[in-house]
Image 1 (tube, rainbow, N blue to C red):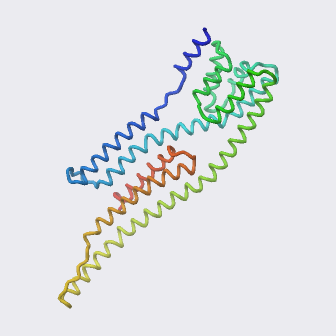
Image 2 (tube, helix red, strand yellow):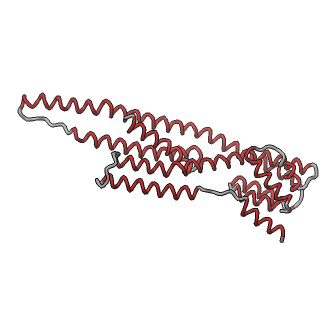
Image 3 (cartoon, one colour):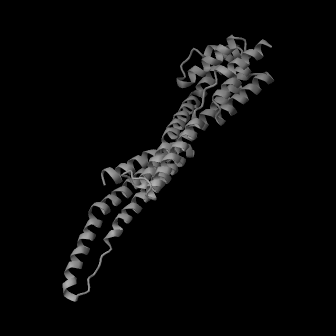
Length: 299
């Protein structure tokens, strides 16, 4: 009964808070607010000095930025914990070879340095000192760091400990499997990072092309059209009219295309790099910021 009470206390006090859902809700509300301002600006009900597409871009940035950077931070923290998991399992298996129980091996290994995994191991050791069984302490660790790799590896350790026998050999095999899994994942991440760079370069070339069109091509077309209209009016008596008033609409289409490319390319970059759409929102925020500065401030 005492162990169960300690287990319940640990579940309530030591489980890390996850603010991703809260940030997602807040970002959605702020985006809706900016989109509403953009709609009012588009229909002429509000004069803000900005185009409606600018408010749309700012709303998307408010949605992508906080949530994207927070989830990326959480993802990196879990990846750092997973990267040191094989070392921890190897040290625990070494303790088992010297005749230690699983609980004693965890407590001895908690004195080592495992980066961001160290606080989690120290929590497991503290729980064991308070009377929580080693398997229950590992289950609490799974609840705090709930990833497929951690759950798979630690579940095998729990079953091996409950079944009895030589747990050290099982820990060695699990550590080797975890190391191979992390190695394959790192190789994939390195290979996919090249495509992420390609996406950023392609987006930069797209912005440069739009900048050149806005700064040189379109103004020269208006100037040449005016000269042609003035030159042919006296010759034939029929003026040639150039629709120069469509140039702002063309420039607006350019800005819309930048927003679409920034948001879509950012998500694609995240999916290629980490296989997660949430991490792509961080890239979308960066590209939207670059696109907004490039089209409005520098353009």
